[in-house]
Image 1: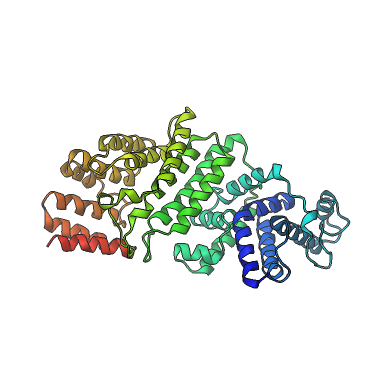
Image 2: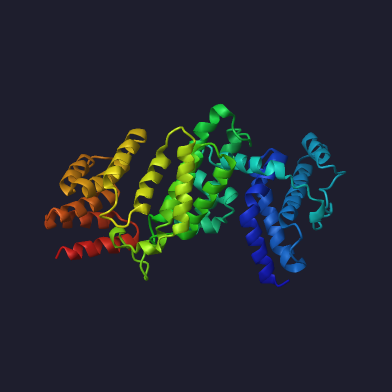
Length: 428
């Protein structure tokens, strides 16, 4: 097999199976940090072996076997008579080497691998909860989740968030050390902790998608690969935890939001505002998936959470033939409900936009004025951007220009900055 084909196969298998492999190794070793290192070692060995020897018949099993062999080697180095190594070796049914592996370091035989399908879902779910543990910082949770659950490399994560690779590697290393120091067990949390921890998991996936759907910096408005990874993680979580309305609400929100991606940018990557988007370009399949997920969230009978309410807002846009024909009053009511459930200046700002469409810019400007002192929006371009738009509609161009110029100063994304400059130029 050609070298390039072998490397492509490694990349494809890793992206699909990495979470299951890391999860299985974490269960076998009881050590989350070690499991991730072992999986990376197996990946490195595959990058050498597969292009040379061909892709094994059971690629995921091959990687797991190599990882398990490395685990035993690591325990052996710690102590030849280590009780933990003896227990692990006994569980694997070995006399000193991993099943199908040469003790001298030869390639593993994929046919001898124990790949337990009944434990895969539990392993992945435990991996998700561990990677998103509240003991970690937000940045660490995002980086670790993308690495061990999403299968992204440090370079890919760094490119996605426009930070140096060394920064991502440091975050991942600190995260693993923090989990070890806090003695976080590799396990699905008990029922009394699951609700709190699930919120952390959902927040991490939402943060990843938000950065993908509207990049905070750089030259691209949308980072499709990052948004798609968040959608994939949300679907995986919904398969594993299918009785929680918040999970289905998040799936619905991501699908309905991503459905508009094809129409959100023009031929040169420039932003296209909602009122100018060609709705024929919206992804109807994604809209159907999103609406089905929202119906599932509502059907569980426990009411919609924050993500479900945002999905319901997105659904209003998805089914409307045009901006004027959108049910803006319903959107205002949904934002009011969202503001009570999850109070946030950003929610209030979005409500102001909806109020401007339903009741006029003057009513909306009063809401924006109340947000002027918000610390959350102090450095954001969103508040002056909305203010500038409202002042433009009210026929106050000088004030609108000052607000939009401030928005340009604060905005980190070059595509959005260009759009704001065009709005200033249109003022004359």
